[in-house]
Image (cartoon, rainbow, N blue to C red; front, side):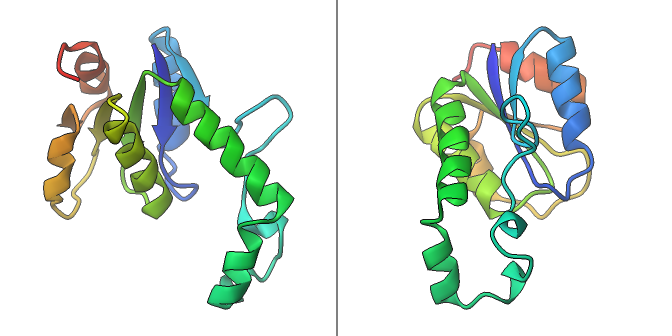
Amino acid sequence: MRIYVASSWRNGMQPDVVAFLVQQGHDVYDFRHPAPGNDGFSWSQLDGDWREWTPETYIAALGHPIAESGFKLDMDALRWCDACVLVLPCGRSAHLEAGWAAGAGKRVVIYMPGKEEPELMYKMCRAVVTALPAVQEALAGSRP
C-alpha cells in the first residue's frame, strides 16, 4: 500500500512511524525526505525570521518557488497514496492533509499514542488507534 504520513516536524515519533510502515512492506511518503537529496520544506528556507512575518508577508511567501515546490511534492504524494496516517500530536497542515485524503476517499488512520483533546470530526477516518500494530490492522481492514 502507498501511504502518506502526515504529522509535524516537532513530532519525534514521525520517523518511527515511517520506519514501522516501511518494515511492514508499504511504500511510504516521508515529508522529511520527500525525494532523494531533499530534506523537506521549511519556512526557514525562505527567511530565518519567518515567525515574525506579517500576514501579508506570509501570503506573499506562499508564492515563493521553494514553497511552491514543497507544496507540489506533498500534493503529488497525497494524490499518489492509497492511505494517510495522521500521527498526533500535529498541527494545521497535517490535519488539512488528512482531511483532504478523507475527502478524496482514501483510507485515513489516526495514530494517537498519548492523551489528546477529543475531536469529533475524527469520525470521518477509518480508525483512531493508540499503538503501531493497530495502525497496520486498521489499514488492512475493509472500511474506507
